[in-house]
Every structure is written in structure tokens, then in C-alpha cells.
Image 1 (tube, rainbow, N blue to C red):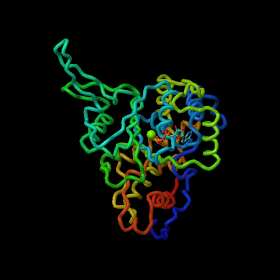
Image 2: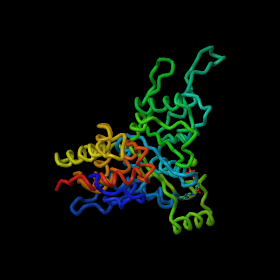
Image 3: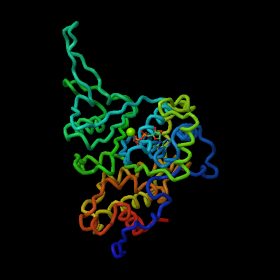
Image 4: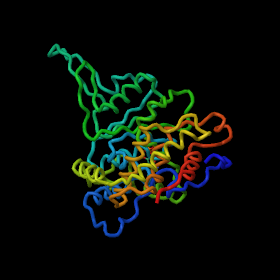
Length: 348
Ligand SMILES: Nc1ncnc2c1ncn2[C@@H]1O[C@H](COP(=O)(O)OP(=O)(O)O)[C@@H](O)[C@H]1O
Ligand SMILES: [Mg+2]
């Protein structure tokens, strides 16, 4: 698996998707229409009324919702990260908040804090922006570790304890944390142990030329990102659909060979000479979960090795670490993962 020469240009990914899965294909023959899946498909249509392209990101966010996971969203400013999250919330009838993670942000600015009420002469809890369904944590690595930790704790425990009283967060609760790939330096990069807590890392690419023309066309004909209702975005699914979808995903079958394949892929990252850190068992469970959700979204009730391959880049890329030497040679995480996937025998 390691004899292949590395090239600065990543080889084409063996799976159908280099970064994250595209919109699912039509349901497999015989699967029959499923109202729950159709409702989630309708969400995709609603999002597309505001966001041009970025289908892979929409799919990834849906998968994360189905898996109760959190998402790292990477992309330069202005590629519709904010618009995407706000539109998804509108289509799913969910609440959303956005917090800019600045260097002076305090933990209480995220979780909430006790405030003194002079009239009643008592302290009462004022919930912070974490009390929502979809929390957009913008530029999470600009804030010092203490504030990052308060968010990560809320993500993990799905509750906030401020004065010793635990307060549960709403359901669903998903953090979408953005990182700007250009401004990596001079910030507070999340430690590996914390990165592992994000189910997926989604990279938002710059639009193709035709897509960018479409974005401008929409603006020229009156689209305003501030008014999603005017753009025709309606709520088409909600909590019940998400609950039913999660139940359906839990019924998706995984053959022992496919379980073994997930483990083999993750183990292979631990032996890659280009990586100083491979995927943890937590990462392996994440890959199983995302592949399962993707299988269901694609209209199947069983997971195939191709589902695993399709989700491996987005699920694993933030859970491995390149060796400095490999990085100097121009090796990228994407190319290493592609090499790993190409090297692990696929069960049939
Ligand atoms: N793919 C896209 N589809 C539609 N509008 C887009 C797209 N990319 C950028 N835009 C436009 O650019 C604006 C900036 O997007 P925004 O969501 O604030 O970006 P980010 O949060 O990534 O900095 C959007 O409000 C929209 O007007
Ligand atoms: Mg933004």
C-alpha cells in the first residue's frame, strides 16, 4: 500500500466523490417511494433555491443530522457557509444562531451565564447562543482554548452546566464550526482530540464559473440572502421527519464483511508512512455511521463498500495527521486517503 510514488497532485479518488458525496442517485429499483426520504430530498430542493451548487455540503449536513454529529466546515469567506446553514434551518423549521469566535469571546458568551436581576434580587440563567438547533460557530480557531472547550463540552454532553445545574440543549443540536483555510496561522488550532469529536469535515469549494454566473444572475434579479422567504424557501420537513429518518437509518443492515472493510480502511491509515496519526476507533465508528446514513439516503437498506468509500474522505480527513516530511513533499491528506482506499481490498 505504500510503494506507490506520491505526487503533489492527488490521484483521482477511487470513490464516486473526491470530497463529499453528491446528491444521491435515484432509489434502487424495488425500493419504492419512502415519504421520509422524499421529505429530506425536498429539503435539498429548498436549499437550492438560495444556495447554488454545494450539493455535497448539503448532503453532508443532512448525514450529520441523521447521525447526531457535528460538522467542521472549511472554506474561504464568501462561499455561502452562513447562507447554507441559515437556509437549511429554514427548510427544516429549525432554530439557528451564529457566533463569531473572536479572541476575546468568553465561555459564558457561548453557553450563557447567570445574570443578576435587581428587581427579584436573584440570579437567573440567561441562555447563550448554544441553546439552539443549528449553531454556526464561525472561525472557531480564532478563539482561545478555554472558550473552544466550553463549546466542545456542550457538543459532547448536549447540555450546559453553569451554576452546577445541568441544562439540556434542544433537539436536534448540531454545531457547524467554520474554519478559514487561509488564516490557519496565528490562531488556536483545535487539538487532534477535539477534531475527532466532529463527525465530518466538509470543504466548501469555490463555485464553477457557470455556478458563479447563476449566483450573480439571482442577485441581479432580486435575490437577497437576508430574505429567504422571498426566495421561496419554505419549511418542508421538521423534527418528526428527522426522527423517522434516524429510525430508518438504524435499520440499515451492515454485513460483517463491510464492518471488516471499515476497520481495514481505518487500520490502514495507522500504518501509512505519510501519517503521524491514523484514525482512532472513534473515527471508525463515525465512518460506519456516516456510510449507513448515506446508504439510506441513497435508497438502500444495506451498506456497500462504495458507501464507505464515498464517506471516507469527509469522515476521516480531520482525524489523521500528515507527517511534516510528507507535507514538504507535497503529499496531501486527500491523496493519502485516496491511496489508503485504493490499497485496502474491497469485499465482494
Ligand atoms: N453558492 C452560492 N449560492 C448562492 N449565493 C452565494 C453562493 N456563494 C456565495 N454566495 C453569495 O455570497 C454571499 C456570501 O455568503 P456567506 O454565506 O456570507 O459566505 P461565508 O459565510 O462563507 O463567508 C451570500 O449571501 C450570497 O449572496
Ligand atoms: Mg459567514
